Image 1 (tube, rainbow, N blue to C red):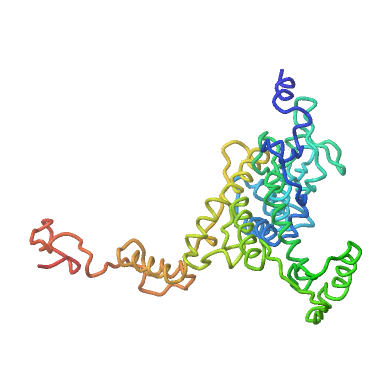
Image 2: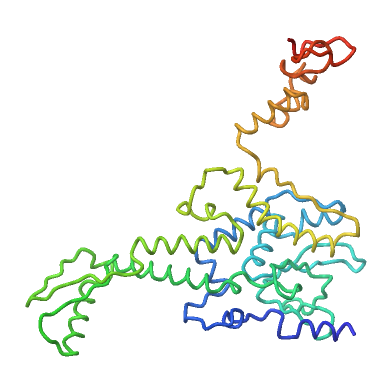
Length: 392
């Protein structure tokens, strides 16, 4: 019964299949450059977004309450550090939609190491009703022995590549970069029309075109003068994507990449808006709307396949959302003056050594403790007041 249910929900040709955009959007697609996941890394905004997410997830300190699981998580392989392993795992998930690592165990079930596997080499087999992974190096791997980090996907058991799902945006970015490359390779020469006062034969027009291209096309001919005769004129043909239009189009594509991966646009380019208006707010938005979904995907998969029920995984994101020194000092001063922290506790937050005599809480002179005559003229307790009480 389980086999039949799985096959009805996820037919064999469903998992890992890249459906064309015309099928997804039910519309005719204008022919554009096709960008596959690996090619997408050639474009700076995509590379920046993917490496930023992967490196940030890799450098965040994360621990598992189960000692043996945490030991493997901190030392995943004999030839790869924990940082490199997590970064590679996330890079595959961000580009291909799925990141894989085989969980190597002893015969008695003890955890040994992770064996990373390239995502494009993995196939998910559902023919038996129980998901299994086919790998070229290690053969068939059972689901419980494969760490599988997924990007959002329609099936739930297989992640869809963000590049494939948003292929129209990627193709637009590719077309813009190709046009910019050709424009600069041609030394920025604009599109022109050579106007002859007389009537020319097709052969003559082709000859003039070839002569112009041989003498003036390419960066090596930049600045070469154009000499015309017989009343011939040169007119520039305006383009919808001149320097200003191309820059605007590229800002739009940077915004698209930002929306696809959830990375603030100002992290990808300095020309899309204010990058320094409120870095603390940007950092929190980046963590909440982008990194936390990947933390959740990793945490759920790691705990489900490595740890016993009830174990937990924690992430220390303080380094990513740490405010500036001015905000930090203001917050610590408020906490000390209100009596919530001692001065040595505040120094500890600043990585400073403690000082003798600063372990007792203090209160600011304008903080009342009750008793005595208050600022409204009423006695608030039967006890004597303190020097910190308001006085009338």
